[in-house]
Amino acid sequence: MAKSVRDLVAGIMDPGHGVLPGIQSFPPIDVDQVARDLQLDERAEKAGRAGQPLSQADGPDMAELDILDHVERLARKAHEIYLAQIDHYEGRIRRAVITADLRVQIEAAGSNALADIRAEIIHHQNQLNMLLQAVGSREQEFRQFRQSHGLTRPPRYAAPDERALALLLLLVFVLLESILNGMFFAEGSEAGLIGGVVQALVLSILNVGVAALYALYGFPYLFHRRREARIAGAAATIVFLLWLIGLNLSIGHYRDLFIASGGSVLMSDLLHRLTTAPLLLSDAKSLILVLLGIGLGIASVIDLAARRDRYPGYATVAADLQRAMEYYTEENARCLAGIMELRDKAVDDMTAAVQLIRDSQLDMLRAAEGRARAHQNYLSYPLRCRPGIPHARPADPNPERRRGAAHFPLQRARLASGGHSLRAG
Image (cartoon, rainbow, N blue to C red; front, side):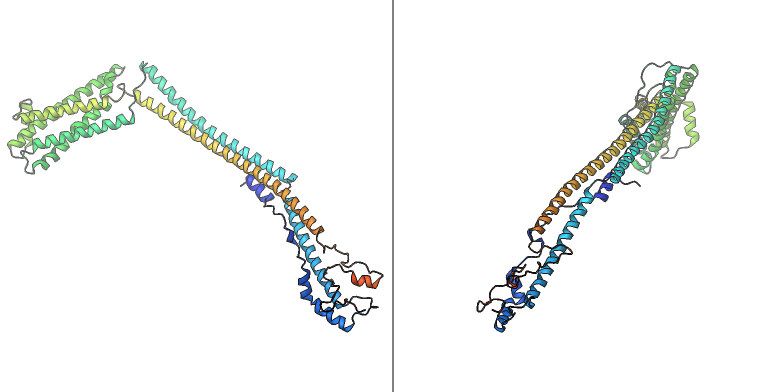
């Protein structure tokens, strides 16, 4: 997987935090402490009493050699610190410099990001083209349906809330008819109201269920353009009415026989009453039960038919077109959001890379300032040295002046006890 521009810049330039060296970057020079460490006062006192060194001596004595050795060690330590600081700042400056190779890599990473965005756009375009073709097919189907059936009005859509309300009313009709029928059947049932409701629930489902099927698949054909379809719709209407009346009359006669026989009804008795006197009921409650069933069946038909387009198939092709358009709209928004997210990610990545480059340039300036400060501090350090150059000055032809002239200010001119010189005489 290709690196982002930000990761590329962060991995190569690695911006740090410029810290300028302090004044005490090099070993501190404490004359009194060095004198105590080398015991110069004690050694000078002893040498003075012993008359050492001799006035005609040309070379340095042991105290002077120890001082020179200490000076050399401090100078080497300062030189090492100086070189380490210079190497550190030089390395940070090199990392902060945008080389030609890094520039090429950044351009390549940016080109890859643009190529990814173009590829994503092409991918979404292909998907949306397919969905757009599907929408065109549905629209053509819708237009052909309107043209072939001579429809000029817009279709009537049933909103989800209307469909939910229609189903809720059907459920209310079923429960209402079940409860009322159960109350009427409870008079002759040994199980009482519960036994009557169970029987009435089955009859209510048959009554309302068939009415719902007729409203969905039979009633719309009464308005069809073709005569054959209208005839089929009329036949379905007649069958439904016969079923609705016959079922509810059967329920009414069944209740009469159910009450008269104490809960036991023979099929032969029920068929005899339906064939000889179908409209004659013994109990007024049975008539109310019949009228209630017929009314709820018709109400079920009205409940569903009023919320649908009355022309058969018109709402279906319109709903297919609407679903295709909505799906295309959703996918279009999703694809656009994906491209925008990819673009924003690329912009954020480039912005972060630019910020890293700015931080690196700032760090380079800090490193250059730190390098100059380190060099300045080293130049002002009294014990600086250069590789290959002796730390001691060339020999002075005057021995007395050479003995009194030392690089390091630790050389004492007097003894602590009697004011004698380091050398006798």
